[in-house]
Image (cartoon, rainbow, N blue to C red; front, side, top):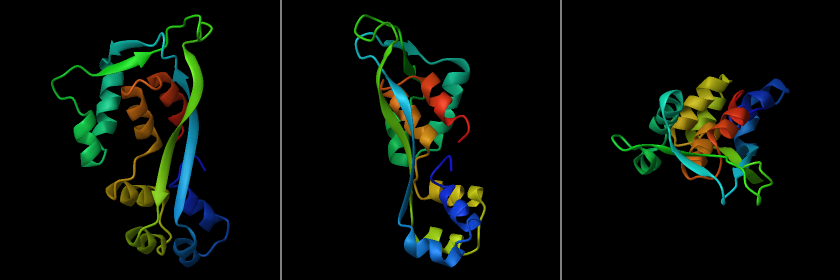
Length: 159
């Protein structure tokens, strides 16, 4: 599957009875690797246009605690871009880091799974319970200067 939420419907599609999934699945994790920005040459720039809209849209869906940390209503929103230097061989990136999505089985999700729900129904409940999607985790890493928006969009395009 492409995300953690897709694990449940996939197991059911494989013939596992829906009543068996909640007691046997405690957590589902999905990850993608993104390149890390070179700490020596990354460039801080103001996010504008579509990039800013996308970031704000995803921040608005975060749990309240994280939303408060990353939401910048009137202040400029900054992201980082690769530049290239001798330390990174001109690529702008060094190493990789995971962007992740974790689905934790809860009583509410267990009840929903018993009805053989769609992936969208599971995702809606998981987000309601505070799950951070892979794209949101990536955007947090963009705002913290760990990776670039291009990398996050590259690996979360199909998610």
